[in-house]
Image (cartoon, rainbow, N blue to C red; front, top):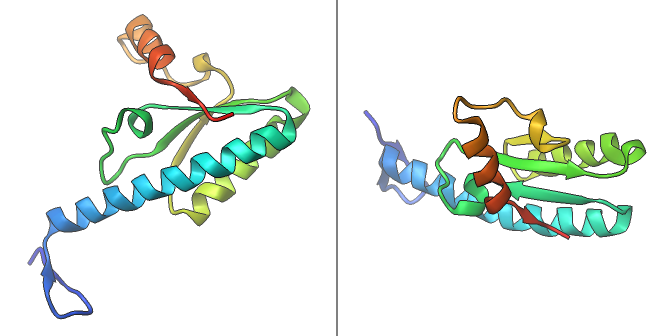
Length: 123
Protein backbone atom coordinates (compact mmCIF):
# COMPACT_ATOMS: atom_id res chain seq x y z
CA UNK A 1 0.00 0.00 0.00
CA UNK A 2 0.98 3.61 -0.51
CA UNK A 3 0.16 4.62 3.03
CA UNK A 4 2.26 4.91 6.16
CA UNK A 5 1.00 5.05 9.73
CA UNK A 6 1.70 8.35 11.44
CA UNK A 7 2.11 8.87 15.20
CA UNK A 8 -1.50 10.03 15.45
CA UNK A 9 -2.75 6.80 13.87
CA UNK A 10 -3.93 8.40 10.62
CA UNK A 11 -2.63 7.35 7.21
CA UNK A 12 -0.64 9.58 4.91
CA UNK A 13 -0.73 9.13 1.14
CA UNK A 14 2.28 9.31 -1.13
CA UNK A 15 1.07 12.66 -2.45
CA UNK A 16 0.87 14.00 1.10
CA UNK A 17 4.39 12.78 1.88
CA UNK A 18 5.70 14.44 -1.29
CA UNK A 19 3.96 17.70 -0.40
CA UNK A 20 5.41 17.53 3.12
CA UNK A 21 8.88 17.10 1.60
CA UNK A 22 8.33 20.14 -0.65
CA UNK A 23 7.41 22.19 2.43
CA UNK A 24 10.50 20.89 4.24
CA UNK A 25 12.67 21.94 1.28
CA UNK A 26 10.98 25.36 1.15
CA UNK A 27 11.67 25.97 4.86
CA UNK A 28 15.24 24.71 4.42
CA UNK A 29 15.84 27.14 1.56
CA UNK A 30 14.72 30.06 3.74
CA UNK A 31 17.16 29.03 6.49
CA UNK A 32 19.92 28.37 3.95
CA UNK A 33 19.52 31.80 2.35
CA UNK A 34 20.02 33.47 5.74
CA UNK A 35 23.10 31.38 6.55
CA UNK A 36 24.69 31.92 3.14
CA UNK A 37 24.06 35.67 3.19
CA UNK A 38 25.76 35.95 6.59
CA UNK A 39 28.69 33.80 5.44
CA UNK A 40 29.10 35.85 2.26
CA UNK A 41 29.15 39.15 4.18
CA UNK A 42 31.68 37.79 6.67
CA UNK A 43 34.03 36.32 4.05
CA UNK A 44 33.93 38.83 1.20
CA UNK A 45 32.00 36.82 -1.36
CA UNK A 46 28.49 35.98 -2.38
CA UNK A 47 26.21 33.13 -3.36
CA UNK A 48 23.64 33.31 -6.13
CA UNK A 49 20.66 31.01 -5.91
CA UNK A 50 18.71 30.07 -9.03
CA UNK A 51 16.42 27.42 -10.43
CA UNK A 52 13.36 25.99 -8.72
CA UNK A 53 14.33 27.42 -5.31
CA UNK A 54 13.92 30.93 -6.75
CA UNK A 55 11.04 30.33 -9.13
CA UNK A 56 8.95 28.46 -6.56
CA UNK A 57 8.64 25.37 -8.76
CA UNK A 58 9.90 23.01 -6.07
CA UNK A 59 9.31 19.27 -6.26
CA UNK A 60 9.83 16.62 -3.60
CA UNK A 61 13.20 15.74 -5.17
CA UNK A 62 14.39 19.30 -5.93
CA UNK A 63 17.94 20.35 -5.27
CA UNK A 64 19.22 23.85 -4.55
CA UNK A 65 21.21 25.43 -7.38
CA UNK A 66 23.91 27.82 -6.22
CA UNK A 67 26.66 29.83 -7.82
CA UNK A 68 29.61 30.38 -5.48
CA UNK A 69 31.32 33.72 -6.15
CA UNK A 70 34.30 34.13 -3.80
CA UNK A 71 37.94 35.04 -4.28
CA UNK A 72 39.83 31.91 -5.36
CA UNK A 73 41.59 31.23 -2.04
CA UNK A 74 38.21 31.14 -0.26
CA UNK A 75 36.14 29.26 -2.83
CA UNK A 76 36.81 25.77 -1.45
CA UNK A 77 35.88 26.85 2.08
CA UNK A 78 32.68 28.47 0.78
CA UNK A 79 31.70 25.26 -1.06
CA UNK A 80 32.41 23.24 2.09
CA UNK A 81 30.21 25.61 4.08
CA UNK A 82 27.36 25.20 1.57
CA UNK A 83 27.61 21.41 1.64
CA UNK A 84 27.59 21.26 5.44
CA UNK A 85 24.71 23.72 5.73
CA UNK A 86 22.68 21.75 3.19
CA UNK A 87 23.40 18.47 4.94
CA UNK A 88 22.15 19.92 8.25
CA UNK A 89 18.97 21.13 6.52
CA UNK A 90 18.51 17.87 4.57
CA UNK A 91 18.84 19.67 1.24
CA UNK A 92 20.57 18.50 -1.91
CA UNK A 93 22.78 21.14 -3.50
CA UNK A 94 24.36 21.74 -6.90
CA UNK A 95 27.23 24.23 -6.64
CA UNK A 96 28.90 25.97 -9.54
CA UNK A 97 31.83 28.33 -9.45
CA UNK A 98 30.62 30.20 -12.51
CA UNK A 99 27.57 29.96 -14.78
CA UNK A 100 29.39 27.92 -17.43
CA UNK A 101 30.45 25.26 -14.91
CA UNK A 102 27.08 23.52 -14.99
CA UNK A 103 26.31 21.04 -17.71
CA UNK A 104 24.63 22.85 -20.55
CA UNK A 105 21.29 21.76 -21.83
CA UNK A 106 20.48 21.44 -25.49
CA UNK A 107 18.74 24.80 -25.14
CA UNK A 108 22.10 26.43 -24.25
CA UNK A 109 21.68 30.18 -24.67
CA UNK A 110 18.01 30.16 -23.68
CA UNK A 111 18.93 28.39 -20.44
CA UNK A 112 21.74 30.88 -19.75
CA UNK A 113 19.43 33.85 -20.35
CA UNK A 114 16.80 32.34 -18.03
CA UNK A 115 19.50 31.73 -15.39
CA UNK A 116 20.58 35.37 -15.63
CA UNK A 117 17.04 36.60 -14.98
CA UNK A 118 16.15 34.04 -12.28
CA UNK A 119 19.23 34.24 -10.07
CA UNK A 120 19.03 36.05 -6.76
CA UNK A 121 22.11 37.32 -4.92
CA UNK A 122 22.10 36.47 -1.23
CA UNK A 123 24.33 39.33 -0.12
